[in-house]
Length: 232
Image 1 (cartoon, one colour):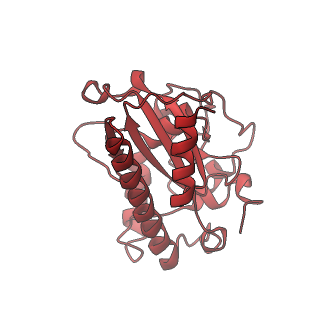
Image 2: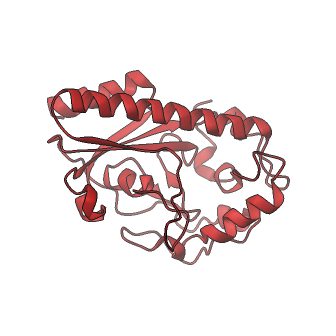
């Protein structure tokens, strides 16, 4: 690991990130951001105990919604600190919001840059049949952050193959029938081949208005077998 990579990753760990990686993402960025071709990708693990309150039948809990927002806030704080530090030492940096849908054009429910894309390119995890990023350490029970930069960090090996195999627990459990279950993820695959984000969002808004006005669900996360042995 280069000294520069070590410096950034130690900073991430000290700020509260649980998993991190560095990736070359220039081919996956809008033209306006390609002057910062390197992604610093990181994940913060969610509380396995709080995630356990999500019921596959009844849906999320109020505590999970609060936890979801709190972790997003932590991720934005980490991203801000890393961005400012990279900028301070003389390079460009750009923090991607933890949870933001621009909905400026179809397909909807996309951020400026995909955290899941940067995470796979940085070796943090792969995309499961739920459309979620799955990590070795925490399964899908994570929230993601990304900082783009011009700092000459050394890219790590990207993940280019999923490990879901024949498992389809998330597909069977999805109350919105938003998961196709027809495809194994591969880099560059259109998200809509795996998950219908509109159907997912509409179900949350229709069924869970009493929980954060229908902003969360989490059923596909909590049923994932990769969530069974994570740190409590």
